[in-house]
Structures are given as structure tokens and as C-alpha cells.
Image (cartoon, rainbow over all chains, first blue to last red; front, side, top):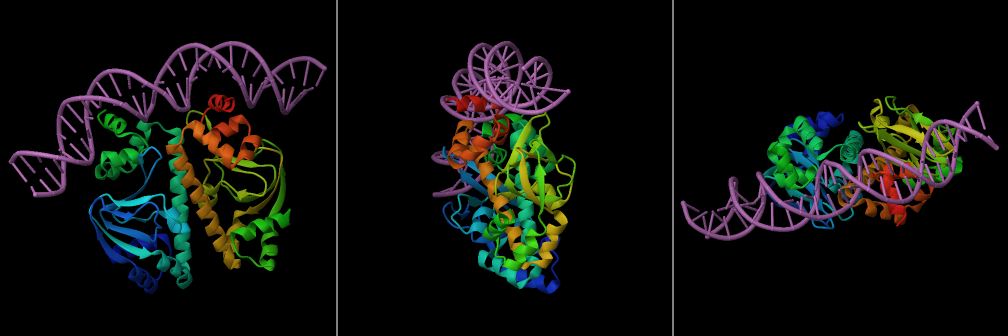
Length: 188
Length: 188
DNA sequence: CATAAACATTGATCTAGATCAAAATCGATC
DNA sequence: GATCGATTTTGATCTAGATCAATGTTTATG
């Protein structure tokens, strides 16, 4: 499990073997059941995750009670409720397991501590932030230029695994449409 | 003009006086006329701006030819077409002066060079990225949870200067609605 | 200053996707 | 494996905001 994590870390910054060992030792294994909540709205996001198997999603609940999925992490991906993790202020987002999940978690404290201990960790974090920014940049473009159908078809092309692994309910909220609309799009 | 820039820089990271001098010397003054294009779609974003007076916006053009304003910088704010600036790949965004504008610009080369020369510059850049991420995070929340009217009213409350300084055309595209819709909301 | 071009307003109509409602299917638990 | 709750599908209707169109109003340019 930690070997795969090392590979992922190396794609994001230039660590030597000793540094990688030091880093992955700070990632603690965790098993969570489907539908369990790892972070509840109002609490501070204090962990950063690497997903070994299964998956997590972050979502928030709108004024009129609808769940809005912001981000999905599947096998071999990393992430967390980033806004609260950055600011260490209460999160408006939940983090939830969308499946039985095996993951590795590093605490916020250890994460920031690595900034001082390992020079490349700053580059790693910078890289995470740049990617998170670009991801959202694209999401905004999609929201303001594409129809529901186009958003669905683009995901089908670029990330079909999402459509296999997510429930319609979650997938619809990720694509910013109602379940009924997604159901109709699928049956075309 | 450079003194105000120093103040802004200091709110974002911890620089000493010597470092500030070194930094602001890399920012070159520029005067641009209203409606002039500082960055054209397809070109690489090679400058980062501090706006002294006037304002810039970034926008892109959708498949069906509509302008979509992503980001607006007014007096004493900083920014650029960030995605292309980060990746140094061709931009899908334009940068345009929304008014006659006096600004200071630092080149991408100098900007990244400062990463090696001034330790706190990494923190500065990290801070910029965190803010850019959070800004977009919020924008997505607004797009998926608020009505056109609510988005307009929120901006009226939080940033009325935008409503004074932007043309209806630009403001409407910033709020993701048509000019006609904005016009109707304003006259209520 | 005149004239064209860009921008803003107002009204009428249209439509993508939401909402409401009910039936059908799936899946966890005893 | 029967049962209850959650999820998905299907149909009917509604609506926020887009689109289309015409007119009024600023603003740039020779």
C-alpha cells in the first residue's frame, strides 16, 4: 500500500528514497465502511488522504437541503476537504466514503511540519494547490458553458469509471443536475 | 505606486525591507488604455499584475461566442490569467483593461526566479494559490446554489464597487447571466 | 458636430431542466 | 428469503432565465 503511495508522491515532486520513507511513515492506515462520514460539516479538516481502494467524496448541503458533490477521490488518488484543510477553519463540506475504503491518512500537523523538514514538500504542496486550482477552473468553465447532457457525455468520455462507481444520486450531484435528469440522459 | 505595492505584498507574506525593494524593482510600470488586450487567447500568460488605478478582467469565449468573465482586478489588487501563468501553456483566457489603467507588471521569469532568491516568496505564492483556490471554491458554490437574483444581491452587498465600475455587459458575464436578466434585476 | 457603433432597456416567447408524484427495482437486515 | 427503506425510473407540469426582437441611449471616431 505504501509503495503505491510513494509512486504517486514521486509524480508530484522530486523526493529521494529516504525522504519518501520519512513521509509515508506519517501516513496511517485506516479502514472505513461505505457511507461513513470522515469529516462532518462544522468540524475542521485535519487529515489528508491517499485512497488505496474504495473512494471518498466531498460534498456540502445547500440552503434547500440538496447535497452538492464537489470532489471525488478513487483508487490511488489523494485529497481532502481542502478549503478547511488550508485554513484550519470549520468546514462547510463533508467527507464521506462512497464505498468500503482502505486509505492512508496524514495529519494536518505532520503535513505542515514536512514543509520545514523536507524541502521538496513545499513543491509538492504547491503542485497540489496548482492542480486543485486548475481542476476548479475547468469545473467553472463546464458549469457556465455546457448543458447537462454535455457535462454527462464529457465525463463518460474522460472518466467513465466515475459513472460505474458512483450511485446516480451522487453522480447527479457531482454533475450539477437532478437524479431524474441524469436518469433520463442515461436512457438515451 | 511602489509603496502601495509593498503594503499589499506584506499582507501576503513576511518580507523584510531589503527584500521588498528587490521585489518591487522587478515590477515595471505600464499604462494601458481602456479595452486594450494585455493577453490574447492562445498566447502564454507571461506577466503578473499589480493594479494601481483602473482595472483588468480575465474572460474566455464559449463555443457559442459568449464572453465569460472569470476574474476582475481593481485598484490595489493583484493577479493575472493564472492557469496559463502556472502552466506556461497557451491561455484560453484573455486579459483586458476595463478602464484606462496604471499598473505594475512582473515577468513570469522574474516571478519564478524569486522563488530561489527570497525564501518568503514561496509562502507568498502559496498564499496566492490558496486564495485563488478558495475564491473559485466559493464561485462554484454560488453557481450551484444561488439564483441569478441572489448572486446579484450578494455582490451588491459584498462588493458594490463592482456594480459601479463594470459595464452591464461585463457584470452580467461575471455573474453568469444575460445582460437582459441583469438589466431586469437592477430595475427592481 | 454628426454619425455610426456599441451598449442598455423593455417586451414577448421559448426551453432546459427542476419539481412533483407515483411506480418499479434494488439491497440490506432480521 | 421476506420485508422495509433507499434508490431509480417514468410521466406530467412548472419556471427561471435564455433567446429573439425592437427601441432607446450612450460612446467613440472621422
